[in-house]
Image (tube, rainbow, N blue to C red; front, top):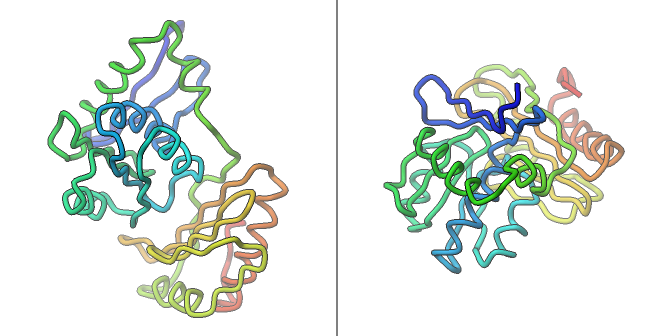
Length: 231
């Protein structure tokens, strides 16, 4: 078709999916860039909350547009609670839950989020060009390591107690282990709902992703030698 943009909503309409006319999916962490820029134009120096799964390109984007990035735990109830606690005008997570306190009530509403997106894009002749221009990186889909009931939390606590990621720049343990590198990041966190370790990797190149994965592989096998890793 010659449609300019595609919007999709989940069953209870509290999450938004976006596809450009070229068929590229604009994941929620990149959607947050557009929303943050818009919200910060009315709320200078405002905090923008996002979860640990989001791209490392989001924090510098928020700072560039005059905001204060705040990384928080994954889980829409946890993000919503942090929004209420801090008074931040905007929060969002990789799963697609976006929370507007700016001109809205601070809860996740996919239809409203879609309307806000259309409002922003209505100022441009070619919306897909705007979306495609948002900072991007090479990333894996969400990967899963199956565990016994309760085991995922134990494994991550062991890794946090003795983190060994030789080429890392920093390690964030607010929700599992998110390891930052000069050219990417790796994340391992226990799911809140199922007995799995959730894994995600992002980098500037495929080679960097493979290097980061090797460090995570070593860390995971050190605490679970029989792990059947999905990478």
